[in-house]
Amino acid sequence: MFRQPRSMNLAYPGYLPGREIERFFNDMLGALPVLAPLPASMNQSRLGMPAVNMWETDSAVHVEAEFPGLTLHDVEVTLDGSLLTIKGARREQPTDEKTKVIRRERATGEFGVSVSVPGEVDHERVSATLEHGVLVVTLPKAAATRARKIEIKTK
Amino acid sequence: MTTTCATNCCNGAEARSAAFDEAPVFSPLADIRETPEAYIVSMDTPGAHADGVSIEVEEGVLTVSARVAQRGPASGEFIRRGYRVGDYRRSLRIGEGVDSASIAATLEAGVLTITLPKAARSRPRKIEVAQR
Picture 1: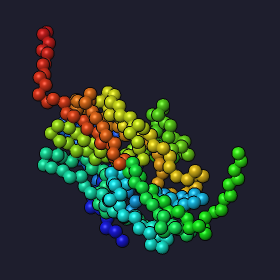
Picture 2: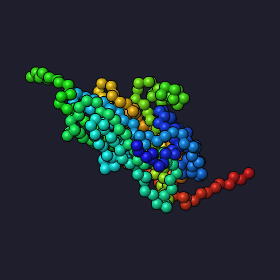
Picture 3: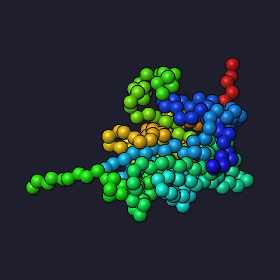
Picture 4: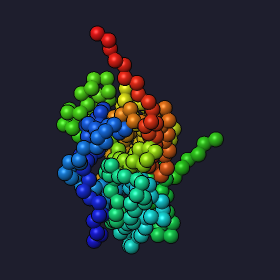
């Protein structure tokens, strides 16, 4: 459905917890030689088809994905019936001839993912925010499917 | 997750991510660029806020850690769970070519950019000759 990003050849074992010293940095920044050749690609980028979290509250369904470095202009969110599609692209950082790329792990290129949202959604009131690199799409439930909760207030 | 921890969290004091249900600690993906003046490290740290980030240099190792607040359902029940939310931590060795006193960092849209200025290359070196 979507093209794979161009720079998929990432030499990185993925997100590993608790590594104290970066094993790949057997070389040093600021010492010579600067970097040893990168090992062959070990895993796929997370960007091509972004991972999505989805959960619901009484009033809405929330869909979340991580897009560090992007703004809402870079991401397109569409809702077709109950199918929510998030797509966009992360561009490569512009560079000049004085700048040398010595390591590239962060994927660039196009991405896209579709998820089926359960229940009836109020299409008019769907909203999205992208803050601190986290996209949150809020899909308020249509009145009919919303759980009724009667608040009893005491004074 | 547990097997990965078994091989990577053996540093005694720092083995806090070993418990299965605790928030994980991720090693953020990084790009490194070199300009004539500096090394520039960009790390993906979605969800991190500047006040939760610490950058330390000790004995030639730059360590970045970022605390990230949990996000998601209060009940803990997801309809779909494609990833976990956790803190970030990554260490890089830096050589003497970096002026570690002048390291600066900014955090924007979940990307942490660390600028490591190069030390003055022209610093004269005096080599002592031992008399025997």
